Length: 68
Image 1 (cartoon, rainbow, N blue to C red):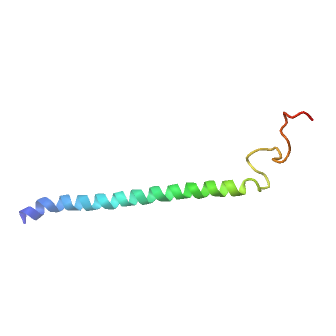
Image 2: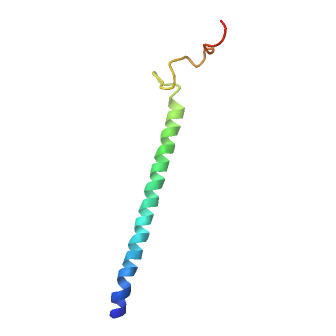
Image 3: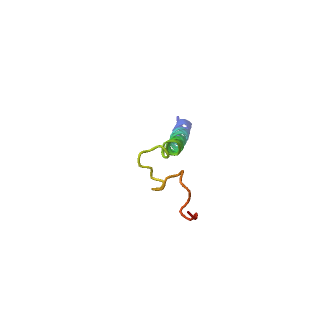
């Protein structure tokens, strides 16, 4: 009983530490995936949006620095 009383708290702390580490890694992967999906969505849909946030210029027109 004495050995169990000495070892059991350490075992429980180790077990909960492993669980908490797993939860932290899971949330880190979820945030990374959300950022990747947001960047993918923005790169696909920004050029075809009715009011793109990239620029007010027409992307098919020549630059303003060209001689006309």
